[in-house]
Image 1 (tube, rainbow, N blue to C red):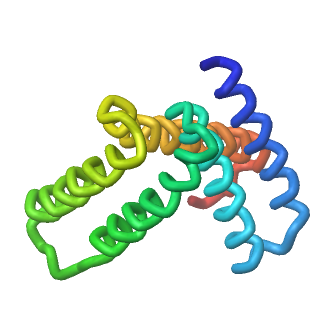
Image 2: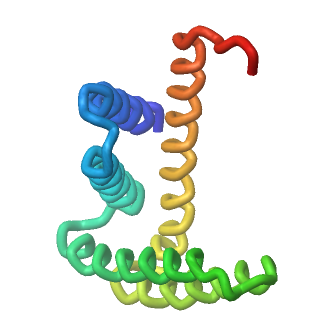
Image 3: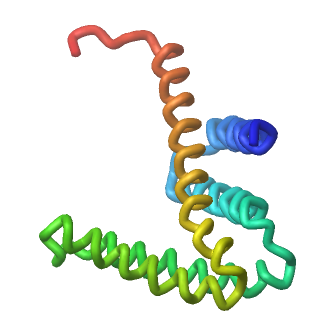
Length: 143
């Protein structure tokens, strides 16, 4: 696990140094998002121990799942927070069944944990970089 975290941290640091040399525009952001998505694919593939055949079947289903969750998260009609969370849970349950068509039930349950673990790694790395950036920048007076 430490090796995985170290590998991800080094990759993220490499991307950060590249991003700093680029103009902070929409294209650079798109490139960074694609890099993070590629790292997520590698991370989840490794965590679930997917064979090449399983990966080929899994990723289209996972991408559908992700798109459906994004669509749900973007809906502003759902005003009640609990109702919104329930709809997101229903989506996860639906796709857990789809994942079991590709892999064992046990590994299908691990999809969501691996997804959350990757998000947590990225979040911690981002916070670490923000803290480093704040230490490097002199404080602005008056605010």
